[in-house]
Amino acid sequence: MRDKLYDNADSFAMSFDEEWKNIDCNDLTLKIDKVFELLKDHPFLISNPENARKMIKFRIFSLKKFQ
Image (cartoon, rainbow, N blue to C red):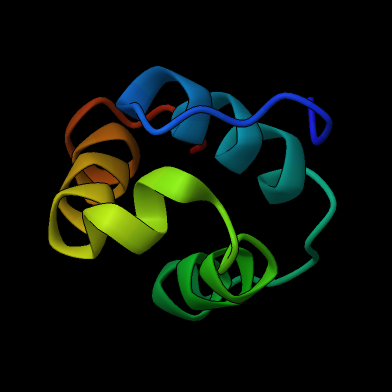
């Protein structure tokens, strides 16, 4: 997916999911920060960092997607 990154939430979510599974960390907040660091060049994170963080927190904490 790294070869096709788009400035939208779906593209960011797919990239986030790919990186999430490669990080070994039990602290969810720290793990989010580590993935965000890896994705710092993603167009959606660059153009909309606040919404990117809100979306990911919703996916993890509200939908319990990764728990």
